[in-house]
Length: 433
Image (cartoon, rainbow, N blue to C red):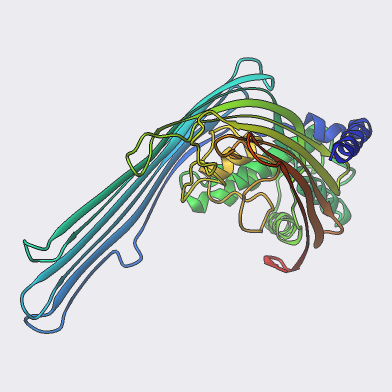
């Protein structure tokens, strides 16, 4: 096992030395983002049926999600609330009414503050949940009501560094190249303009242009792209209708054609603790943990990105379960608000339209996150390396290798190895194999 760690460290140093040429990626910073959204859905929002004078029923269900966030170079703050309500009532032929009510609520939020931009930061966060369920059989003697609550957690963390996802630099550079190749513009965009264009594309993914009215998103976005190209001297003046449509088609074809992998750049070290306030069984809570985590992202080239990560976790209670919190709507485990890749994960967490891999669904991030928990009387250590490589605009490879050591205070230690590889091919825009 020591030999494997040594090889990874040597490879890590080698990549770091050769990554200095990636000036554009190293200078990249995510744009500030803020917003709020309210989502309300009912699979069968309200329904009523009546077969005859003695058989009838009523059903109501609703899902509500509210999110609000604000991220900049100093503050990352936000939270969200999930509410799910299901109610049903049925009356049978004997005039007996059966009813059932289920209500669940989850609240998750927190704040991270960088005392020095991109350097030292502190985080506080909380996750609270409550669920209740009641049944009424219609007969007083046999009617029953049951309820359940929990769990709830508090988090605290101190860290150093910051990781950014510069993956959409690839989209911006490809967009500029297609404009040049088509004769739409002369020369190449300056580095400053390419960075600004990338930030505009970021804001499309973050939903900034559609924060108020969806129909305004494209006009606002393309007006700013046009202004950017004029100021750079790439085009001589405002676009006519034909060229405006050409601009639209070019950038959205780029969005659709690319297997858009992340290009993480930067490093981050974090020490965190989790304290369980209460649990679902209402017994004394025991899921208290501490962990130390580290991550380093290296965009080796325009086509290849690497992420190295590691963690050391230990329980603060001998009866800790090792599972930690689980949430129906959190990214991965409901760990701290600030995880390894704060900008990517926070935006994914609070903005459902954002996806790590472009048009692919799912966004669980990469690497070892603070959500790794150790069971009571056991410590854990893990190392992982992730690879993202674009073969062409339509094909790419994702892969990772990871090693974990499990060291119980009694009994034998064990090591787990995992190797993963995946080939992506974008057949027709958003149809992926």
